[in-house]
Length: 359
Image (cartoon, rainbow, N blue to C red; front, side, top):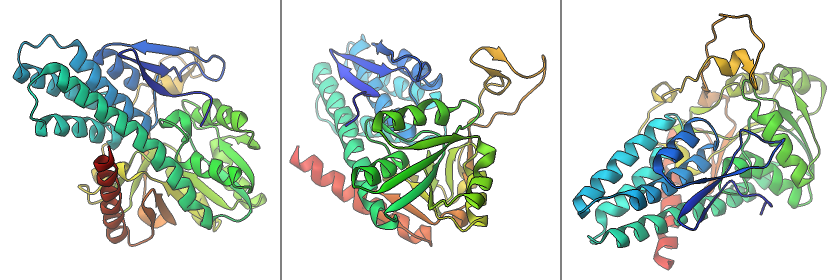
């Protein structure tokens, strides 16, 4: 495991690694209220779909702790309010709603009317979500190994490592697994405008792991594919529709088009918790728009003319026909995705059920 943890529950508090100040400072924040958790998700103190989901689950535990409810019914009402607050903090990443709803469902089927017991149930479920994420990420990396040559050069977009998850990582976890299994690995890291998660976070993680890399500007990926040998593009995801259309950090769609033009396999690392079978295609995925100053400013310094406006969608949707395969913890999905994805989601649910029965 990494020497740093994105999130940790300690002494009835949620400890978060503040990703806004990396790589220059390693700072942890202690949160004790669900409102603080919602703000930390919204302002990207914590980011990455799996990490957001686990953070929200622990936020529900904090909501139970801080509730002044005098009855079980009132506590359940307070938890519903907390769920709405957390879900509204970032709408695109389906893991957030998935984790919160999982907590609510666990409470709904509970026969307990004791507030303390209800808190313990929530906390236990949050721990399960966090532990499952680590197992899931490691299995995604192992499942991807047969797709990769021994000497492998990747292009990676945004950040999908231990910082974006509870630990290990999804797409960066694939890179990490290849490195740990003796592959000769090199990574071109998209800087990932406008918040530079690639340059700030992925580069930092690769340094910690001892994996060779170079940072490139987002617009250089096509040229790099044409002039350097690139074996695979690996990206994460925030939501995958039933047909395989995938929402991920803005710039992913451009990268997929460039990969198709140059015959480079384009792989999506997707925990099944990010697969939303209720949505027929990517047109139904809500796309978060963030503030203009993320584009017009960098770390408080304005780079655009005063009063210049900006359009800042945080995500784009890559059509399924640009995706070579979707790698999950339950196996690898190939087109047609509306047939392969549901079967893998079902397999993953069986796996989770078997783990729960062992608890």
